[in-house]
Length: 459
Ligand code: MN
Ligand code: MN
Image (cartoon, rainbow, N blue to C red; front, side, top):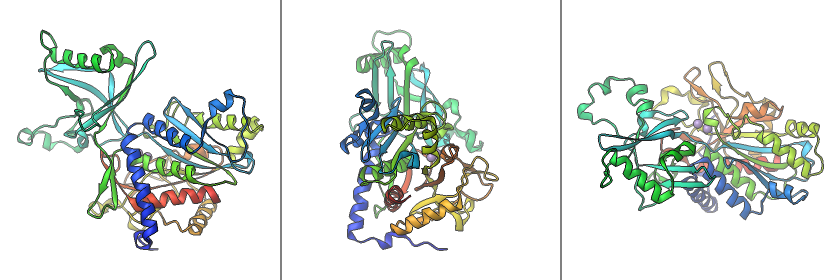
């Protein structure tokens, strides 16, 4: 079953729309280097599209009706947007789910030290990374430092043209005789991912003068003390913008495309869609890369609780109605797929791989080994999705994550499936997944957004 390359089908108007969407997307991932920043930007765009904060609606004692648009967030790291449909919520929602956390390197709670007149920050990596990919790159630091009085200080170093960057060094090839014999897993070890942040001693300081210089900078720039690192959440990520990739500009290279590419296209689909029969939802969660744990991860009760609140505002809350609304829902659990890479064909089974330019990818299952840890979507549901995609001329493909027993991975799909709703994994194929700079096809991004709109309208 060969599927056509969708680029061939585009006329001028489609290409214009495709490029417009991708410009917005590049801006989104350039700005959204952390889950907090993605939530902030999502709220900004949602408000512009007429969405209201659900907390405000509750506080004002207002009710909701068909056509109303609201959002709810938790701890600034996960968010759910609702566009209320004409049919009762108990008949179910059409949910677009994606995650907004990405692999990165986090600063430890007691990070700053000086060694041989150099100041470094100790780190603990987040999510699955090949550690050797993260050295010798210009890196930026994003996040918050929360002071004892509750003040939240936003930190961002390394993104503006005039900003300095930081980074992790690697051993020179001339002295790498021993290192080059090591396995890729241990070439760069987790405890050695130390970020170099300074080398100039502070005048008049005797002991740890380079560290003192860094502390002076932090005091002057952010009005924080060394001890404030204890209550900080600082993420080290690749510095720089998302850019066009390829002579023909057909691709996007950027940090955090897993899974902000699905988050952005899902969000855009909901914000632009017109009146809906069934309530449309865009759910963007945190902590997927470390098992969907915590209050802001998919395994929390965040979404269920928000659904209860929405039902209450619709004047139809009951415990049973919450269960009915969830059970009758349909979901596209959207996360990136591994794109076929001609440099590494051996890990893929060609008939069941995702390809650039062949559109939105559906995975019946993910997991590893004998599908362990997967949500296995029902064929009845897949048939319905196929029909919807065809009706709306959305290019789509189906894939597995590599050859059987080659490896594997999971998503948030199995968690929502618990409620009895129909869920299938879908998303955009990506090259160099989990590397500092990942690559996606602009055509697949465009088809994903089209597919999400179709799903909201028809499922
Ligand atoms: Mn992902
Ligand atoms: Mn991932």
